[in-house]
Length: 614
Ligand code: ARG
Picture 1 (cartoon, protein in one colour):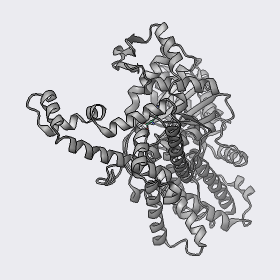
Picture 2 (tube, protein in one colour):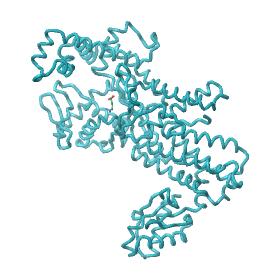
Picture 3 (cartoon, protein in one colour):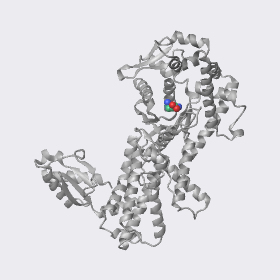
Picture 4 (cartoon, protein in one colour):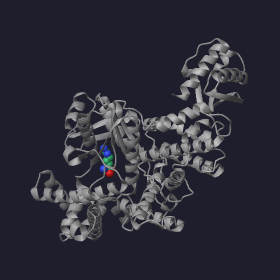
């Protein structure tokens, strides 16, 4: 049963009967009727002007009359400015509600036999996860869930960037300054500990650089390399990377360490393995807090040399160009300049690594789509990677998609910690849970429960606040995460949506065993808010599909907010348990229960759980 097709067919038949013309369903353009007008669906009749040789107003009248007479589902029509607004009758809605109520898979599409891989999080192993990762993870997770509900088989993956000079910096710093500290003996979470030593490396390096600037060598370099009239300060600011490579003691040691690593030096590998395992354990704890997991991990240490074959192929086909040892692709015509694939010293790059990893994933899973959830600062990187694979005619190239998302800021002044690093994911999670605790205290609804139950609900609400606030923003938009606002029960928030669900559950508990839901079928005169709710439930399955096609979880979040809002309003305007008749009560209970089900299902696509009480 699909009301859209029913209406389309009705319009086609009406055009045939009234004007004797044949049209097909593509010519019938329809929208959900705007709030301010009466009706459920609006048909655009302008395209039939030629056929009918009449003004839109008259056409809409003709078709409306015919449709109401011939289509059982449509009970009424009106015409506004040449648009035909159709109202769906109560029988249709009643049947729909009954069918949806007994369909355990409402909103879940059957398998479409297609596979998609979603890559998200993909951190580097020298720092803990931060606020940006949270947005990434939430987007990746919700897209995975939505794609699954839309009928795809989904493989959730990451690339863990666990090698390279940055990783060696944290290793070297630990070796020099940690005195054997471990997460176990210090009680510090593994990723945080490694991150702290990375920060310490940066600090020590700064100090080293500053004192070097006083040396004769430094003055010599300055005099030789400065631009016309350039002050010392400005020069040394710009010379930092060169210093690392040319003169720095710490830089030299870090580079030596990387070389040792690449040559499989046992001690270096041992240290690397140990520190990596600390970080990964730490990450896992954060993932567990957020309620996410992965099906398969790829590690850069296994994949960084894999691009070679593809690059050979690219050179043979003339897609890539080699100058000395450097290999690049010319994307000048695409406005992307030249992209280096292999560096002039013959070593691999971020690009070559991604080429190899894509190939490996395709060999492993053969997914027709691969979605990369990565920040929008890497748009041009992925354009390069995808372009090379396309030009090579790789069978999976057309299914590659970079889901680029915007930065997340915190309210002014709080973007970064004192050390200049961005805010840790763990700290932020703790903060929203604390906000949620304060709110719960003020509301005072939970005091009858055990401490554990209270804690569980507080955590649940805090996480819902965090997740919803971030997911409701379209992925492409930059945003500010405001912890205080996110928990506000009156705002456009996760807790607001949860509250609608909790309200419904409380009504259902009160009504349990006291109403005969069968009587709902006798209820006919729907209130307009009841129709709104039916309409919103009705739209859900199609929304899941379009959210999957557009990789847009924000559309689901906004849907949840809207239906929760309609429900709150409905609850305010109409009584459910004390409805005017037994029929109305039965219908409203059924409707409320279905709203609750859809809310729970839709929020779970966003990785948000619903509490029974709050
Ligand atoms: N680890 C990288 C970073 O933190 C992101 C990796 C994105 N994924 C990829 N396939 N390149 O910037």
